[in-house]
Each structure stands twice: as C-alpha cells, then as structure tokens.
Amino acid sequence: MADQETTTTTTTVTSHPAFFTTKTEHVLPAQKYFIPDSWRRYQLSQLINKVLSLDQSIPFDFLIRGEVLRGSIAEWCAEHGIGEEETLEIEYIKSLMPPQRMASIPQKDWISSVSCKIPESILAGSYDANIYIFDASQKPVHTISGHTAPVTSVCWVGGLLFLKRMGTRPFRVKSRTSWDAVIGVWNTGIPDVDQVPLEEVGEERKKRRKVASEEERPVRKGPEEVMKSHTNRVTRALFSPLSSSNNLAYSCGLDSTVRTWDTSAGLCISTMTLPERPFTDIAVQADGNIVVAASTDRTASVLDLRTSNTSSAPILSFSFSSLPSTLVAHPADERRFMSGSYDGIVRIWDIRSPKVAVAHFKSEKGGKILSTDWRKGMGVLGGEDGVEIWQIGEGGDTAL
Image (cartoon, rainbow, N blue to C red; front, side, top):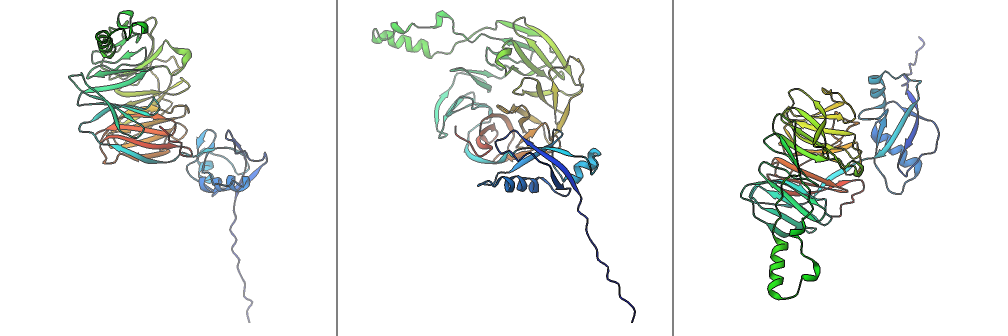
C-alpha cells in the first residue's frame, strides 16, 4: 500500500508592532502591542475597550502619522511603504457619534441663514424678509419684520441682532460682503443719541412710551471703514476666531481669492489665489491658522493662512457631488468642519481624512442646504426644508 501523505495548510498571520497614544482620559499602559495587519478600526477599538475594561463601550478612531485609518493596517502600510518590522505609533481619539435629527421647524419660505450661538435660542433669516427667533422647545418667540427684500444673513453680536438683506452681510464689529466687491466694517456700539439713561425711565407714562419706542427701533449705521481689493463679488467675510486677533478679518469672492485684512488700517495684507475657483463660502478653524474655502467647482480647499504666497496650492481638497453652499468650523476642534450643499447633504469632515467624510446626514426632504451652524453637541441647518436641529457630538451632549 502506498504511503499516503497528509498535507497541512497553515495560514500565517502577520503582525505589526505598535505603540498607542491618546489625549483622551482613556490611556492604555505604555507597552508594545503586536497588531494583526488585517485589523481595522473596529478591531482596534475593541482592543482599547477590552484592555481598559470599560463599563460602557466607547468607539474610537485611529490616526497613524496624523492620518485617519480608513482601511486595514496592511492596506495603510502598503500605501505608505511601511515594512513589517517597523513599529507604528497609533493615536486614538473618540469617534464622532452618528448624527441624529432632533427636530424640524417647517417654514413657508427658504431659510437663508441660521445661528445657534446664543444658548437656548435659534436665530433664522428667511427669504420672506422676516427674522425668526425660536426657543429651546423650537417654539417661535419673536418674528422681526422690516426688510423689503429677502434676509440673506443674520448673526448675534453680544446681545444685539444684526442682519442683512440681499446684497450685504454683517458680522461682529462687523464686516459686510457685497455684490460691488467692497467690504464694509461697522462699529456696533450704539451712539449716545440712541441711548436712554436708566434713571429717566418711568417718570411718566407718556415718557415711558417714548422711551420704549426709542429702545425698540432698529439702529442704522454707516461703515467706519470701506475696504477694496476684490475684483468680483464678495461672498463671505468674517473676523478671526482668536480674541488676540481682533483686527484680522478674512474674505472670499467670485474672483477666486481668499484675502486677509487688517481692519484697523483698512488694508488687504494677504491674498491667496486659486485660479478658476470662484469661492462661495469660507470657514476659519478655531486655531486661526487654517481656512477652508468652498468653490463652484464642487470642491473645498484647505489653505494655510500663515503662508505668504500669492498663488497658493491648497494643503488638500475635499470633493462634493453638488455645489457646497455653506461651511462652518467646529467650535473647538481645529481639524474638523461641517459643510452643507445643494444635494441636501450635510457632511462633517476631518482634515486628517480628506477622502471620506467622518459623518454625513441628509435634510428631511432632501432640499438644498443654504446655511449651517455648529455648537457643542448640536448642529442647525437652514434651507429649502426650513430649519432642522441635529444631535452631533461625542456622547450626545445636545442641550440647547
């Protein structure tokens, strides 16, 4: 009888040595781990939770050399030419929880601008020429009229409300964008002629009515500075998010430029040009170093404000399936921003993961998104479908 040979097939599992680091409160022991190269985010997240014996499972994302891991360890190493013996340093961060719709506020006309910067209130400007203020329960508490054209932007400045009709856009001390390629800067302080001393209130009923009338009327002001440099329509202007940079402002326009301004001198001090990319909106990140600019070619470009080049290649670009109409920076994390577009989709991006949005959600009826705002735990959108409020964040901190 012929000897029979038994062939045994073994599968070799290759591993990579790795150290884990984190800035969260969930810190692994400082030691080397050998990670199977087939592992992805899910398995790595399970490892963190198991080693730390967490009572409630926490999902994590992972960064290697500052880039979010989107595939397997093997795929990342092959793409970056990393050998099997090379030790990886992997940073883990809390994942962004899937956004959840909290409420919808239908409106008769398009909502062009929203703000949730004031706690327990939502401010909305509408194409019906009115401004609406909603409370934490989404009930309308004020309707402000007076414009004869669509209100295209609103914002809070301290306890004051500023707004614009078609063609201008106000901000803080405040800046205005316009169709005539000019930016205006206003001082929002109310002059003495518009102020009423407290001790004068209540002397007599007639006087009280007069005082109330004076206090309630809107204040119109002329710009303190008019800044010229753009050669086509200015689509967005905003101040630096840093309190130490009160005199710095940024703008973008249909002339394919992003400009930095010294508002105290009224001068353009830096111009970044991306040819044939008319810009629709910009967002300045929380650290004041990075600006994200959306353009009509359905991309968003990340630019370094610290560069002095007049013609700058973007650090990286994000692609969209439809026109990105609105951008807003994360309120604290300088690496994340949110976009809204004409396809009705809101996307949350991380500049460490330019290929794929870290989260996305669609407006209730899929209508165009015209404006977004973001504060801790909450996102607000405005557009064809009215106003929508979404839960966004780590762990679901969503209080208005």
